[in-house]
Image (spheres, helix red, strand yellow):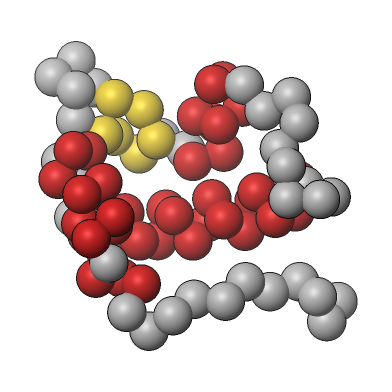
Length: 77
């Protein structure tokens, strides 16, 4: 469909939010960016009015497909 797209600015992979998540999650910046794009696509497909209804922690963790290991580092499933 024509409306099934999300805008991504050319500076998004280097935005301070992406860098901060990368630092906190102890993950490469590029991987964080890819995970965020996947998550934004998933979130857009799941919402009608921009709100994720009934999207608790379990659903969000499954959507981003990342879980912490025993040392708190992010690990892809």
